Length: 76
Picture (cartoon, helix red, strand yellow):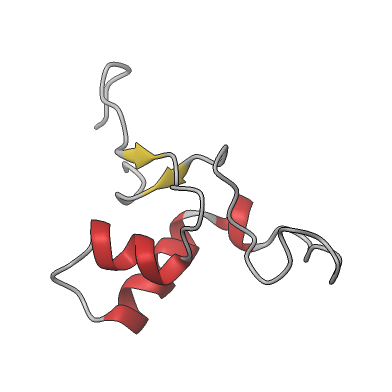
């Protein structure tokens, strides 16, 4: 059982990070497609964010530098 002083590993993304670049850096021992799927399932608060407008600087990439991206599974 997890205790209150255990912290789930997370990162702040770099300015141009994508799911693929984070997966490559943080889960290098895993295949790219599998790692991206796992990261997205751990980070639904980012993955399920509404798409940005086409003329937005964020268009095509939902990840913001201010997001907290979990790179470890939830603790049971």
